Image 1 (cartoon, rainbow, N blue to C red):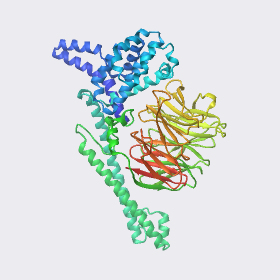
Image 2 (tube, one colour):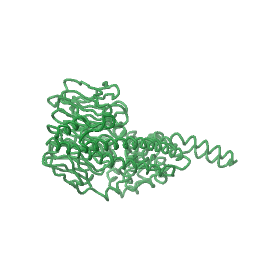
Image 3 (cartoon, rainbow, N blue to C red):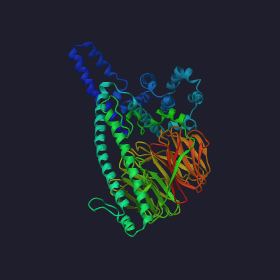
Image 4 (cartoon, rainbow, N blue to C red):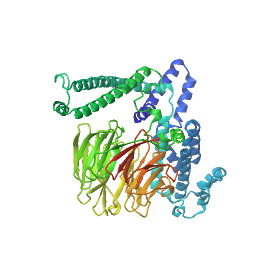
Length: 627
């Protein structure tokens, strides 16, 4: 969980200086002067910079700028020996690619500064090692080229955009790795204390929930008893719905029986939920105080962080063995009167929001399969997005230039934004995972011009317009895990990646299709971007090697403009004219087809399990569980 990463990062960054002082104090107290001197000496030459990733990345880049390849290799060998070798084997290709990119950045920088002697020195030292690697075959020619920066193979490595993306990738990788490594007991005790407090608070909350559920259960039993007698008890003892009393008092026995069955089902649901919560509390109470604390209902601890860049790879082997092969169950949400345009799981996965052409949005409870709220927008729903951190805010964009913000806690509209009338269709909305802002893409009626805007989620005020060349219309946008990058798909067939942490400028761009693009998404590990085109082609593009195709996936294209990944990033689902198609990343053909009688227009994947949403042109949303 993100909380686990934050606690781990807090321990590493803030506790290390404090613990260092404790160690020095202890050595002084014991009179171990030589050990104290050795400790201070080692500390001055700390290769990992106190686990401060910013300093570590800055040091590596400074070695590139001073042409100190021996220091780069020394530090990388140290990282491999102390950190990388303890990682899951599925992460080995990532560490290899980053090392390869660091070396190539060194060569490109040396050539940019007319230091061919350093390039020759590099190949003299590492040539025998790299000669057996086919990915380095072309690089042995680079020192003999007059203008390697104009060669299509080497050109990307000479661009500032590539260097910026590489530095961010290296930073994200090291941050994630450092947050996953097991800490020594002297550092870990603080995290255990914080986690214990967190679980104690959760247990206290669950006790309150059990009390509330017991009250609900008793109330439901009272209603059932009143219905069986054919008349209500005293008003102060029970609250039977007025509509139900009307059916009983007028002798509509069949209707009363139907209502009675509904109440009995309600009691069963409450009883089931009560037992689940009770078991959860029992599990929590019996494990608090042990060295490893587990609460069955709580999010995974920091060792299983699912939001970090590497989390999917840490469990990839188990997921691949299990696989997805068939549909386990399927259920339908009905209630819309026209085709579904968007459907989205909330951040917790407990709720579903669906919007349709008729201008209505319905918020569903996934457990009870019932409608919680209905929002009337009086115009076609074009886009839909939940706030990333909570289930509280739902944002919807319409075809008449309005963005509505719904507060699910108060069940009221929290804001209504009117955008530029020249760009009335809000084609997409995406919320930043690390800040209280969101990005909207608005398109003109002719679909020839567009506007990309950032808004404050707190004040609902426009923050800025992101510069777009020729006002190209953006059909889809997606943030990376920390909100520093935004990838977009445009009607001109280009993919653009914007740096959202500094000046909101595009740092890379490539032609992805001769047709327009309908959707784009970062892969879970953020080393690739997936694009969807109406022609029936899904392409996986490398982020590190700009414009390079990694895989191409084919399916029966339809009206769908969505692609959704599972929580591990191993599979994705896309809609088609005759159903939905599930793909495994890296395999060009689908591994499962979910048959539907009508076209699947929009899809989404549950954030924690293998449940998919399929929004169809037949006015319903199908909830499909895969296994």
